[in-house]
Image 1: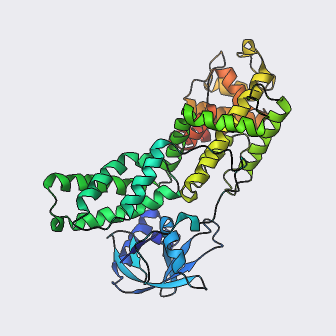
Image 2: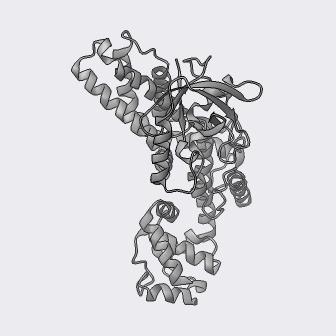
Image 3: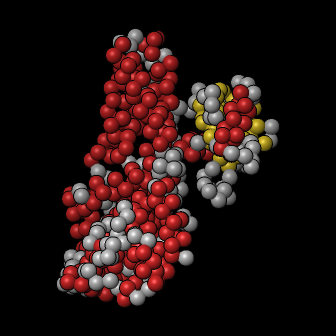
Length: 433
């Protein structure tokens, strides 16, 4: 029997109360359900948050949604009306419900059944960055572990494979990763409940418990909205690829041969480099996520992608575009700036003559030399606010030069994930307004 996970219950059964009250209400509701109680599943292709969403109803009231990593397994079971019946199996004793569906199999459905979420890559079929070696291993181990039968013959091998799988958990975050992680978590939980039947040694039992906890914790991390764990994995992954000479040489050489007439970024015609930069930026701007509409902060646009909905190939398409935009921007900057390092300490006229600059100085946010006295994330928020109010274009280039810093875009992204920095943003608004 295959179980499917129903989540989001506390947001469906009660409105207008605090999170603690929602949680308590969900716990009371689930405690009143009984095994075998009928449920109805209904696809919601017009759902504004997730077009792949599948809602779950009990007594014709929507009570939650199928875990998004499991919707690919459920969708083939829906009828022509995009519905199917199921039954309650159990709860986790907290706010999660598990159901089963007649006709469901243990075999995962191919990811090829999923529609592509991103538009087709602007790089075509010939310019593709190969998957990193570690991710190929992740995909191979995860796919094999997820389909193994939980029985006495496989128990020792499952523990061994899980030991290889867990260290790879935080390398990548995409639909493929979360799909396998969800299935592996179920397999390990089943193995934990039957370990006494399979003759595991004390050491194996302890290792199994440790590995199961790691997978369960990682599965929860995938959906954190406060700590933005998936975004951190995305950024770390992008940094690894940025520094992987083998991967990037392959990508950059193929791109230059295909789109820059076989010339390097610095040698290609400037107008062609500029046109390519704008073409790739347009591809990012046309992505469907509303939060990715900041053309002055393309890196942040990429960081806010719907990672959990993307296939690994789509994720690499996005990585490739972001890395190429960086290289194109660097080539344009080199040609535009020349040797202007001698002007690095000069405050732009729009800033120097503005009362806003005096306000931040009086507030002690910058010293007499115009250098920030606050943390890097807070300085990035200050730069963004000043540039927005004064109409300063290329804000990161301007303030990185003025403040002798690099990667202020990254500092800005960090600030958006820190409560302390966002509190500073409110204080800054009062100072400037």
